[in-house]
Length: 154
Image (cartoon, rainbow, N blue to C red; front, side, top):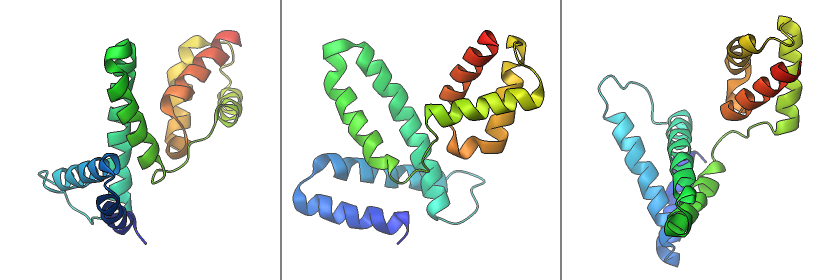
């Protein structure tokens, strides 16, 4: 069963259960997919790849917003909690990212391959190489942080 069908089944279940949070996030994703499809120059299928791309983009935006709400303290707590639910709920349709230990090992390996140990100016080169080769399963912000730590400590 594809993501589209899973979301449709989840929406029916959420409507029956009166689960507003799930209903809202599923409908938002469907809106985002429709918006993407209607953009000038869009070509291609409405398939799992499109849904994953849309969900990844939405999760990234919501995570940034969640951070901003968290910085507001108690005033933003409810909204941050709502966004945290959405992010967690949608993450099941995204490829799993490598953890910090695995990412650190890849960073060290790439630094050694490029021969740039101890050169903080090479951070962009290391990050670019990693994201080009393994970007799908890496968290870009985690990579950037670890690269900076490893090159600074080198």
